[in-house]
Length: 149
Image (cartoon, rainbow, N blue to C red; front, side, top):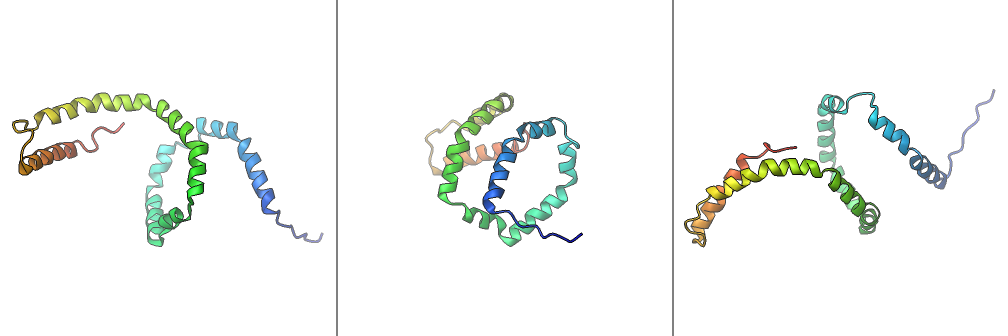
């Protein structure tokens, strides 16, 4: 049997197949998310060194900056108007409970920080204001990483 050389399909056919296959694969994607073969947390933790090496390589090659430079304003606007508002609102609503848990935990801490600041001279001179700002920043920095949800 003779070997038959395949012809490469035109790019328009690629695009058409891509759209139709992606458009009809939502149920399969959902099933994969709901029934993963491996736990994404364990797989991600196991791949951390590879991820970091990839980020370093991309940084060294300037890949991130080159990718950003390649995005046109028209592409950004199309992505925003097509996906932005609805996805933003949907995800914001979906994560409201998580934000609420963070806010209820962090709000009292912030209140304590603010009430602990020196209020004896609220319209103080430059040095007094700088000291109060530094005290606030130091106190906020001390909370870093403690209130992740």
